[in-house]
Image 1 (cartoon, chains in turn brown, blue):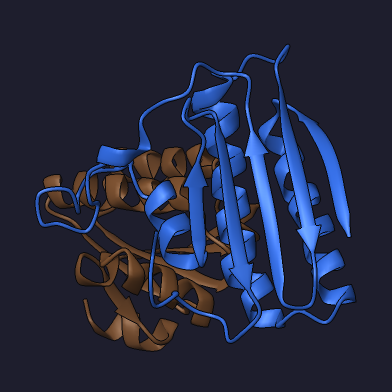
Image 2: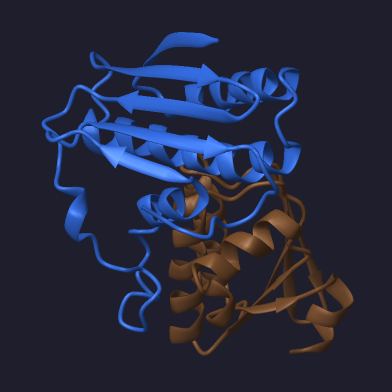
Amino acid sequence: MSFDVQKKDDVTVIDVKGQLIVGNRQELKQKVLDELEAGARKFLIDFAGTGYIDSSGLGVLVSLSKKIREQGGELRLANLNEDLRTLFELTKLDSLFHIANNREAALASF
Amino acid sequence: MDLTYELPTDLRAIEDFVEKLLVEGRRIGFNPDRLRLNLRVSVTEALSNAMLYGNRQDPRKRVRIQASFTTREIAIRVTDEGRGFDPRHLPDPTTPANLRKTRGRGIFLIRHLMDEVNYNDQGNSVEMRLRNGPGGPVAHAS
């Protein structure tokens, strides 16, 4: 897995490429925490390049959601493919996260 | 076709191995959606659990996988060298009280994506069966 980070106005946009799984989830977590520490408060994680997230990847997203919220920030997820949507719906995590169909909708929702 | 494999307790070995199973499933004409979602997720979760919790990330321990492929059903058994656990009373990760927890979704996913899930008495071996058909959550989780 790799990720690109860019700023769109005051939103930190993270493009995740590849699978978000037990072996690499800490990298994403640390990156977001570093950005939080640096003062970022609005986050968009774009999964257009991600085919699969395992349960530990879902767990990291839950953890990040909590930490961002504790700092008064907001998190959006975008571009989940059909399989990822199924996993979020099955685990009811679609009720925990603000999930947008695409990046533009996610950015507009802040 | 019945196949037996052994993996080291190394999380990095999971992805390529699961792909090997998917290739076999595609070869026999199994529904690709069921392979990509149901089988991939369930086997990946079972292997992660075996390595992380069963074998406690001990590189000296191994995980054994027995796989059976037919056009009607795929059966996968994952066995670790751990002491086992009791899978009967796991909390539901979808309740409001548990939704914000960071762990506890792996076995839930297996049970909702495979047609049959059975643990041995010790709890260190799980057999998962997937019948051919459309992808997505199964109607009855065991």
